[in-house]
Image 1: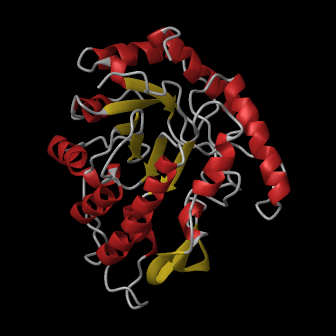
Image 2 (image 1 turned 180 degrees about the vertical axis):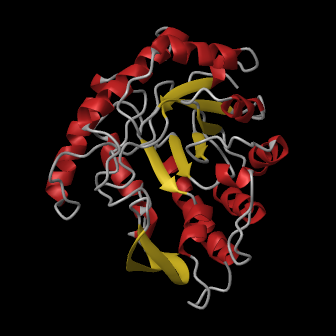
Length: 334
């Protein structure tokens, strides 16, 4: 699948925001986004995002803009506020497309947009007895909304769209114990609906980030089923720990799919050794065409705005490392 649209130097989307920035101050958010665009270009990223600055967390593009969800007072251990679905969701307008168009005006590079996957939202917001019959029904309704948004984003010039489902890799080992929860099969069916576009213009990539850690007891058959079921063009995979499972996860990916390797751990400040990273990529190159690849940090730096994983300077060092690795692998062919 090698072509000129692999966006070699990637990142997940969320960035450490400036101190004191509030989503309630649109002018300050817009100014911060302009600075973030300049920052990403200075670091020679081949994708540009708004850093998720306009949102409280990475789910906000959906939860903040569609009806049917209620915010609760509970917060999980990951720092995410708990939301519950009280009815089937309805979109009240574009989710990200308007902001993406404004972002495009700030850069010569087409912006990247990231959305929470419908299966992830269904799995984490469904609660029996609140007006939705099943997690699968909720997921399918969300998938229609997300698919329509992806089509709108593509029509407005966005060429890289990422769906985040942090739960999928965990389900390669086991299904949820709760019989009312979204099963692995249902999760695949729901996310497959979201990426099923009638047409893909040249250079468009629909990406899926299925989680941050490759399970040690990876089931190769289930991994292959994951890739077969969801017709994403690009898979953003963990590759920062040097485990056999990371290689197995990549090995199971069909040759016609692009891949992006998360080579820098976004959760710790310690900087990876470039030679170690390159040896891992060399091992991947023994069975994958690296022309179909890209590199990125392992996950977003601030998927929850109030709980960044690193400080701004450590984030910069990680992004510089990713750019350095990309140049070692592909030279200046971006």
